[in-house]
Length: 521
Image (tube, rainbow, N blue to C red):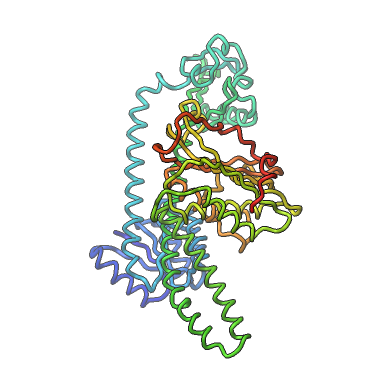
């Protein structure tokens, strides 16, 4: 192993070298302590991993991370620092670091490096496998690719079967038509830029978004060639297009999964360290309260204790996200559970926010952890409360027995056939912006002001629901409100197979009328 170590403390560097040589006796370590030396080492690139302190003489750790990602994006970057802190660690992970290790816990260093190197190796193997697949696919390109030819006026003169499958236009419909109006109706400028480069260089290659007959976007890897006649004059344009729509979706899913794994690892480490730090503080608070000489001192101690309890609640959320849903599961009485949670929530709501519940008397039982399901309800209701406009509004909890059949399964892709209990929580808040819908379940993503939200609420909710073998959906309309639907598998032996509940679309996101007569008692 070859390692680049950015560290200005010689004693710390020698300790790190001692720890690493126990695991990798033949490892090569290049240490630098300046920005200039670090840049020179990055330019050489003769290393497998970067290990960096956070506080450095002429730059901070985040700047070093940015430089590393710019020059050596495929090299894993790990922080080894005694001063990085929780917020900086989270920011470092968001910026691209793969892990961080606290200096007073050197035992985590070797496992962290092994994990980072294993990920690099898996990625390399995946890239090699993809390269082999591309080589094999090249042999079949003419059979599967969409190929067409146009004259210099952009009129289609040839259209193969692959083009028909890709676009939805038949050969009869396509021949003689302008390619721009057929496939580039919403992106003429992109086509024109590519055409200019083609006419200048004789060929062009890149990714394009086409708009087929059904108006559905298709991503293609497109290769254009300027075809000349015997005199060497341009005569036509050959287009060879490979559909990469699913590949792009898969790449996005892989990146999302990798980001979630990295954040989960960091969250677990941070929560573990915080727990160890909070325990003696909790013990000391009780002793200090008993020995407080006066009411003023006791009030100060109580404020400190309140802050510690808030920190402990955050640690609990971090651990819940990092571990996923676990704990003791038993048969739940959802009617009672929802009623208790609603009564608790009522105490946190202002007078202009109305909380209503509508729970079936014959609600099917589910198996789960009462604490975790309660946490799901409270997190969603608190989010709904925080989304209320200044004039207040409604938060409503609705339940329904639901038997998923094959027809309903088509609209609920995560469901399996069988009985479910649906818990819907709706609000008349400000709604979720469309551009944020794909990110709301990401850990640490929040639209709240700094200090008013950790971004862990919805990721914890999703983790708990999936841990109960259920799933969650969300619909939102800006300015009108949001509805979260939680689907939990019901006990098959206790559910009545003759019942069929409402479809996914039968519950309007913001229909408050059915709830206004059911206030919390």
